[in-house]
Image (cartoon, rainbow, N blue to C red; front, top):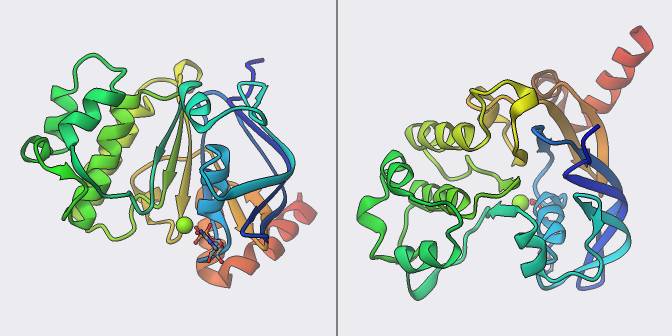
Length: 250
Ligand code: ADP
Ligand code: MG
C-alpha cells in the first residue's frame, strides 16, 4: 500500500496559549480528497496553518507526518517543498510584488498560459498580488498559485467563501483538473483537504471522505454528501448522532 500523504496523530495545537486543536487524528492517502466541515471559529484554518507550521501556531503534542516524514524539525519552506500547497481563506495582499513576479518565483510547472486563461487571470498579471482583488479574483489567483506550485497535497481553505456562483464554477473546474478527477482513482497523484463551512463546494467537486471538526477534534467521518445532509437537517452536532445510528444499524 502507498504511504499516506498526510498522517496526523493525537495532535494538539495552540495559538497564543489558547488550545484550539485538542487531540485530532487524520490520514490522507494518495489520490484522496477529504472535506472538513465545521462551525466558524472551530479551528479548521488552524489545522491547515499548523500543517505548514505558519508562525504563531504552536504544535504542543502529537505528530504530523508528510509522506511518513515527521515535520517536527522542519521549516515552513521545507514542508512546502515536500509538495504541500495552500489556498488561503484570506490570502495576504503583497504590495510591490506583481502576480507575475509571484508566479515566476514559485513556478514548478512549465507553462501556465492555459491555466491563466482558464481562470481569466490574463489582465491581473501586472497587478500587485491580491491588492484590490474582488472575492472571486482572490480565489482564482489562489488556484492559479496551486497550479504553479504543482503540489501533491492541496490544502484548500473555504474556496467558496465570498465567491459568486459563476466564480465557484470556474474555480472548481480548475481544482478538479489539478486533482485529475478525469483520471481513475488509482492513477491520481494528488490529494486534498478542502475546508468548507457551507458544503456548497460538494456540488462541484467530488470528495471521497467527509469529516466534521468540532471542539478541537474530528467528531465524525463518513460519506461527504450524507454528512452534509445530516448537517443540514440536524446541525453540526447532529452528525454525531446520525453516524452512531448508522453504525448501530449495520
Ligand atoms: P475556523 O477556520 O474553523 O473558522 P480558525 O482556525 O480560524 O477557525 O480559528 C480558531 C480559533 O482560533 C478562533 O477562536 C480564532 O479567533 C482563534 N485564532 C485564530 N487565529 C488567531 C490569532 N492569530 N490569535 C489569536 N487567536 C486566533
Ligand atoms: Mg477558517
